Image 1 (cartoon, each protein chain N blue to C red):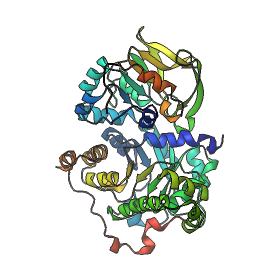
Image 2: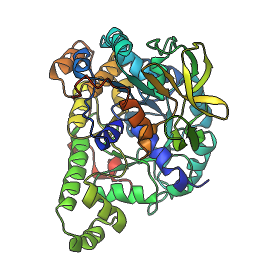
Image 3: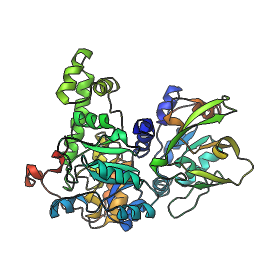
Image 4: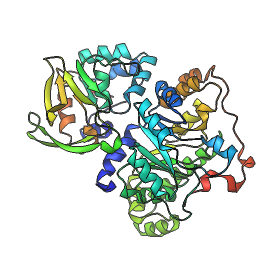
Length: 181
Length: 294
């Protein structure tokens, strides 16, 4: 689904399954899914160190489970990359029946509303790093955060046709780097 | 809130399960094994399909206590099955907040004409299909996810392949028709006209399409993915094998790296025997689970 958003923005993309796939990328999106499943595959296929290394140099965007992977979470089931020092709770709202859509406000990106889709979404319970900016909140809880070139959302911007957040992320890519898939 | 308002959220959850493996489990220990092996969801049921096939009798929705026990033991989505047409079982499953309901041919049908009107529920439904007409009827009723039926509990991949190829062929056929032919084809396949029209332009189902029914090995999972499945359900294949943990892990890796023969060779090596499996000629037509559903 992120791929379709990128296609609309004329940005080439590929799927990263091996460390070598990262060499040709200017930026990385870690999508939603199940963080426990991601974590298993990341560690089993030697992706942990090269993802950390990539995130230090280039823009990375984690959505939902992708944000959990960017965090410092360290449980028997999920080991995060430790890029964003936040406390995060998996399935913070409950099961699928508690999934919801809600308008959030994006003051700096477009000064307008964004219809955010929260699916078995995580909750950011604490931010432990002053360098992390809160770009948007819902009822006082952060839902879109940024630290330098690292962006994280607890919701799914790829499931709505509004491309504002993807555009904002793409603008973080250094223009000197050639974009290719 | 009616299901209609929730359709995009529910299809959204199905989207998030893409590229993964959903495993049948009968207790919390098996659910934990599935989660630790990298499953993206579990299907809670009292007896796995191969045991249902062996034991016979009526098979029904599982005891809510067992489903709740599984919900409490894992962090990944928990799905559960209700009988075809049994909307009260579905109401109960919605009440205990399962993440997905499978209106499943594996259980004994409760209604020989009607499936559940799934749009009246907030919780998402997955349904089985053997061809495009059946898939679109279920989507018309409100299913958020389709899985090809295969033949559950057989350990034999042939029916899963047949159903996946049939759906893809049906879609290709539809996309080659001109607008004047769509109503006749809608009548022919017994599918809602608006969905027939939609598929003829988009050339894909409006919801994700997974595969189920007969997947027993990592190679089976990769075969279904290469044929176009977006995820796989593995039922009896894991916990009826000799080494469930390692088989579960291998199937997960094979589903992710379905296009990489070296990786597939590697994960297929050294896992103990798969479930034994049944040839289709040994299953009389009236015992075929796939023929349940209308």
